[in-house]
Length: 217
Image (cartoon, rainbow, N blue to C red; front, top):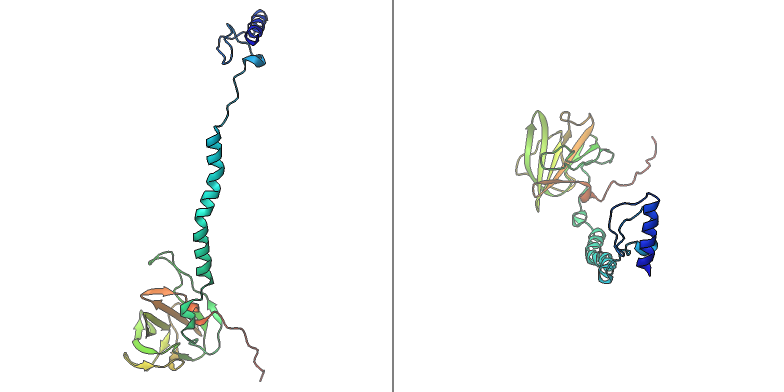
């Protein structure tokens, strides 16, 4: 019955001058017009049930596979930094960070491999150790202290009377602030390396201490 209606409507379309030479799924008219009857329209495309089911299940499966990684990352963030418990002190008495640590993108990239702090004349060792170097590097006076465990401190510009191999105690004076290098006058550069790689010194100091109001005069 549907095919018969198709043929009749196609004949009407031919008489009205709207026929095209094409074949349509669902019926086989001799000529198809621009407006096909419902019986001649192709059946709608349907998605296989199993494919639809797989599509709905993919997202939950992926998110479930990432859950252990998210939990592991959260645990890492919650763990305290082991370096913070080593008992280091600031190499200056009154702390004012002038320039923060800036990690380079790679070993030879630009960055600021330490922190710059405003300093008085006296510079002290942040932890127990032995002097690894005391002298000039590229025209600026530098003191380097090996604290063991892969931790090495660099203080500059600092003039000092200590010699290589001397033992220094935590908070003991190791020199006097001088001039030179990239720091502004009255500023100490404090760098720390762990196993040869520069790290943020704040990891050993627990962050910037709170400001304390001192009595005037």
